[in-house]
Length: 358
Ligand code: HPA
Ligand code: ZN
Image (cartoon, rainbow, N blue to C red; front, side, top):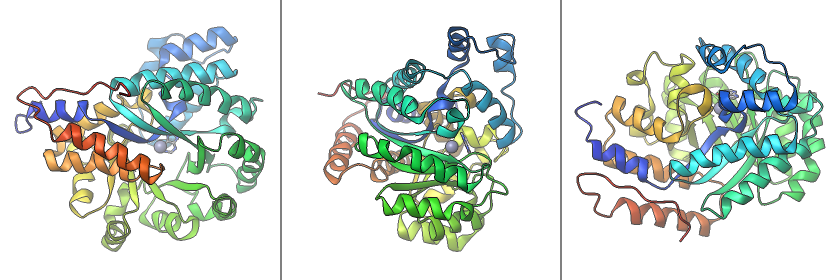
């Protein structure tokens, strides 16, 4: 551990009630579960063993990761598979004191294998409904794969229309993910306009590997409510100022950025610079099974490498609730819970909260 960061701050952060706003549920599939589902469904994997699969997790960029991520998702066929995947993530989230999570899923990854979107959403939703009884609230965001044509995204949106009504309180938005370079947000202007007309929340990955111009496009053409990653915004001071002024949040995923070589190592991460310039940054896990950790691992790595102080960490955790797609009353309750925790005496040893709903 970095000696200049008190152990108690790391523990205080780990114990804090927090939101997670950038998690691809397919990226929470641990190798053990991938192999269990492959066996259950008779799906042949290109890897001999759990160890061989894990050994392939040495990524050089986003695409090198996506190739393996889509291969891993190929084991998901039944509603129960989506339930089991989500239930496993819920355990990790609860262990990290996540009290609210907004989860991405990639329907096109499954429909191309003949799995209906309704099956995907039913399994994920059932696990999230169970989690609610344990103090974890949640939303679901349908992401379009940007390497595919916009026509495919439009067809996916049309197919999902009944689900936006059926799961009105869970399925509240659309997003944009997959290979960023060469697939700017402008490619998806029409489908985002339709989602906006339906009153859905809008997010898009932008400025992970792509340039600041992609972040401008996400803001100006797609009219997103949040930007996923957005870390390359730092290259454009006017963009940083705009993000700070408008409080459009960035869902930053520090371990992901290092694993995908966006930054050489964690000490080079620009999260603290963005925070110091008034940008509403949040900390999230992205694809925790692939990038070396869940949300608390991301907090710990960031606190230590960037020497964050108590006020920094409080602001980041609070930003997660501020940027959540919840009602004002729900937001106030979440922030009150954080404040009750943060400002109590943590002593020398930090001390965490449980996540019981009481
Ligand atoms: N970026 C883009 N697409 C993704 C990611 C990511 O970090 N994770 C899963 N799909
Ligand atoms: Zn992502």
